Length: 165
Length: 402
Image (cartoon, rainbow over all chains, first blue to last red; front, side):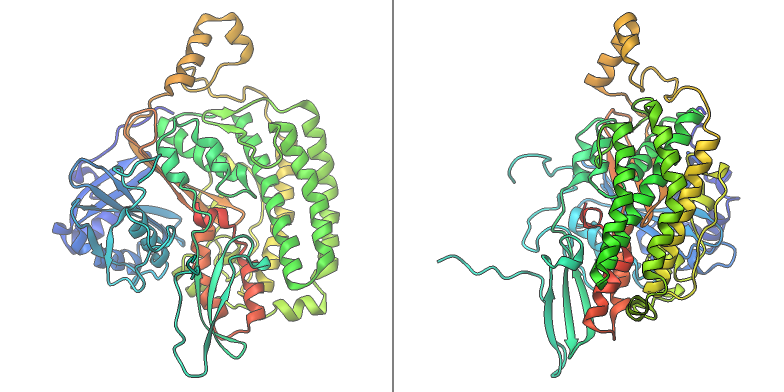
């Protein structure tokens, strides 16, 4: 099965229900979209994230009722440096969707989605601990993997793999 | 004067009647190094906070410094009770990044070994869970059959636990011929062995008292708190990735997905015991229709050549040298591949920037998410029920902390 090229053109993708719903709600909130290797990715503005999540969860046609995962990728030294990634799953419809938020490198932060999915609690703590991305409004934003007095965020690309800090 | 060690974080009692209690990390029933901070009113749990990270080994960071094929042995260590499930999720993710097609025989063997792994993992869970609650003898019964599955893993991979048997593009080796005989013997005998476990537990009045109605989790709470796998299905949500979003050829097999609406420890027990039987049936089906053919994809730049070819063909030797020393470039992109592990949705998110090393590997560990449901399960219950609840969500701390 040779790889099909990724589709990144919003015009071609706007028929997809999840993207169509978000564009109908607020076209300015969607920065980009990509369909690659059978997976749909939508990049949204960080200010619109929580509302977009609530819409995707509650819309009867979509029902992305389950937050499978939250993670982050550090594109250091490029800007915007961080991508926070949300993997959504619709349990009734057996469909996945990836939401992305791009954040600048200095003092990265965005709004928590724990009010939409309580399960985001641990996931966001992990991203905060290992990447240093702050989630405003999180009920308990503390380190989860590393000791509380640890310095630095180990999964950042400027943090060494070996040796002493 | 050495400083006294005070474990952090701590919690403060919120009322005049309550006090806080530290449970773990070296508590025998927390299955590894889980520390729980309990706020209790008498024997009743008011608040519960898991403190994790004692086993954090930075596997995700290590993956970024290795070639793609070197990531496979690291994935074993994430969940030491189902190494092959982790291998599968990782290699499937990389294969999707590469656009590799896997020959049917390799797919069937992968399914077969995955279901044996599920049996192996559920047996350890059943034995230790029963031990926690006080049924000592079940442990010995479970480990008798677990030994058989470990022997099968040793036959195929040479290792009992850290198997690393799957490769990007197929399998490491053709399994030895007597492996199929050993699997056949196991499959024929196993249902009667599950009857034995059920004889010991399912109608046992002490077992029922300790599990029925204990650690209740509603379907809404389970979804909201991110629970997956048997924990979610025991709360009445009918989803199994093997059936609903099939991977590695699971759509070719017939099996039932056990679901229970009770949402308590007993429901999780029943769901897992039925899964033991269903997994056994899947293994039987793989034995009956095992296709012939190669076990590696036809991709000489990605899959290591056979030993024999390396000794006789120049190209094979060159490819071998290049793969081992330089790895192979993977087209840029990202893939999230989820599989149904014995504990729930095990997802690998792999990002490639076009180089021979993964730019980012993230593991969505089912135990990590399931652990969030523990407080909801335990609030208002007794301390002894916490032990039953921890056992019932089947956490593996290697996977929680990664």
